[in-house]
Length: 387
Image 1 (tube, rainbow, N blue to C red):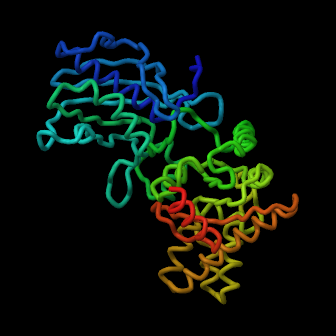
Image 2: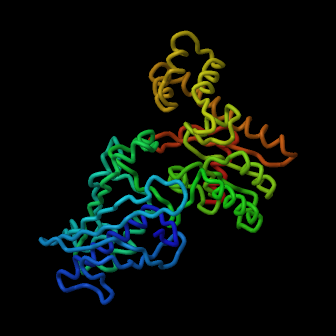
């Protein structure tokens, strides 16, 4: 039966981890009063942080394994929307370890390891998880640790590697499984119509926000995780998903005067071609847009043909940089400007608004790649004046 609240993946991982820790403590006779009995499937009380408050999250089982180890299991329930993590089994194996030094910071007492099915960054092989996922584990586990002890958690998604093949993880340099990148406790679907209505309702209330004239529309969960790390204030961020056109208009109608579009270049490039609903089932056109921009910068012949045939925008831009770094930079700058220009033109079809629209694009390495003229101005203003 579906749980009342559609929790994101980090919440299910934290519930399984807490159940494993309590089983570990109980095996040593140190379990707190409300400890989960070994092998039970009772709910785990978790402080969710985003939004704040304690909720009880169901787990499937938890048991001590002997030799100072325990296993907790939960099954992901993301609610009724389209979500490939539905039914995903989450395993967390907990064991003790000694922190490298006495008096270590509390966060250093928690060691996280990627097991089977967890996504890692291709370059460093580090576990790919969001700041929210890490904080959620720290807040709910560290208060239970005995003095002087550290906790090692090995996270396992048995079907993670298989499911990752149906995501864009690899485009962001994440391999071997699913990234743990949720930024809040409750699932928000990017593509479903009800998500559009939720965003529109947020924008109806935007005039009552602390900065009613400023807004950052963030495309996707990766962008929502990256934006605060780049200094963009959390209070300005709204996860837009694929419904960019209606949200640009709604933001202008709500009185937003400075609007920054922040997203992966492989997604935002569609706006440069006049495509303002970015789900791939509706329209693509990315290769055509990039090729047209390259032609306007003087590229032609076999190089232009290879660019058109590249499997992804990321691969095409990488090949461009190898061929001619200066040319690649000019094409990217033209892309960002085209996104801003087409977005302003789109908005002008619906009325006369004072809204200025900027664009900032990041790449699969989660690095800010390029910003348009307005986007650069808004980035600096939001990060320095409002941050």
